[in-house]
Length: 318
Image 1 (cartoon, rainbow, N blue to C red):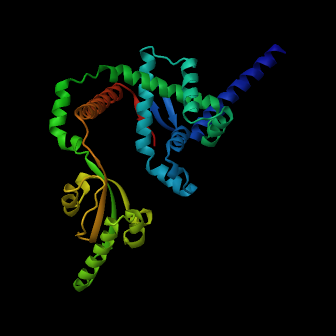
Image 2 (tube, rainbow, N blue to C red; image 1 turned 90 degrees about the vertical axis):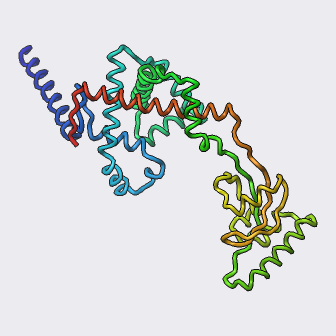
């Protein structure tokens, strides 16, 4: 009887192992990273979850086509992540249950979600709670090892910042801009009609000077789409202004209205609603420091990933 029972257990174990092996074969291994495998379903599930909202809304055939085109580069990213996780574990890094719980609570607080809403969101993304916790744990661990191996070792000196400002000063400092409203008259096809347009613009300007609402006049007379919102063009950076606009604005103070002037597209009357000054020196230094840090991080991260790949066994089976 005992012998018969043991035989039954062996059969069950062998059948279970065979089924598991068949499942892996059916799913298909797309990469081996040291002793770990990445499967086709893992690749596609990750691509699905990381896809932009626009991609997610596409028809299934179109979405599959986009995923197929991005299989290779996305698999490379997954391999890099797997190597980071393996490196973290090799130096004894772990993620506690409390850290995962805290991260989930932070996400729910950020998006003002209840437990039910959170679980429904996971369901829509195709994750169980345990799968999501595993994913989150990996993300935290990956962030930990990157911070430990790279970010914590980046030192930025004042000289680095100053050099960046000297090399990119115009880009950093050229933040001056203007909020402008306009009344626009299209350039006529017939040059003889220019005088008619100019007289019309002069009449409108007279009404402005007499106290009429600039915005209402823009709605009534402007031939620019902005006329529907009272001529408001929003914030425009100084470097994006045409020469004609720059010359007109250079003579104006906030709240003033220009005389009509011709530009390439037609005749304009503009009101300078607000002038936005350039960043102060401290803002420029902070922006420069951030740019230098990002540049050094990318360089060091690329070198680190390269070194991990060079000492790893990687087989790609796409």
